[in-house]
Image (cartoon, rainbow, N blue to C red; front, side, top):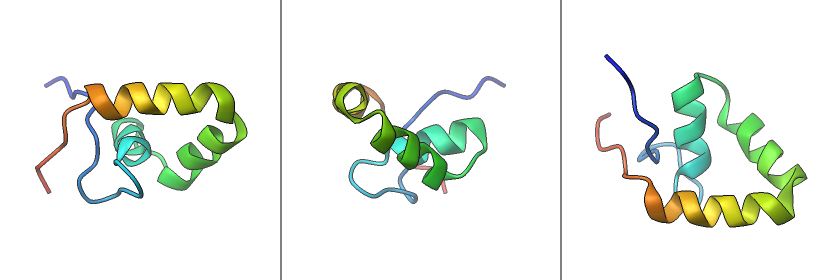
Length: 60
């Protein structure tokens, strides 16, 4: 079964994008958030695009 990248419904700070990426790769959401902060100018645009295009994961 192929998993799709989705926003997290339980591990979210703003929209659940970083939590969804962390769940997809099986790593810590703190690490993903840290990467987004370090690469901030570009990652902000990517975050906005992902927040608007990804579906929310409703399974718990």
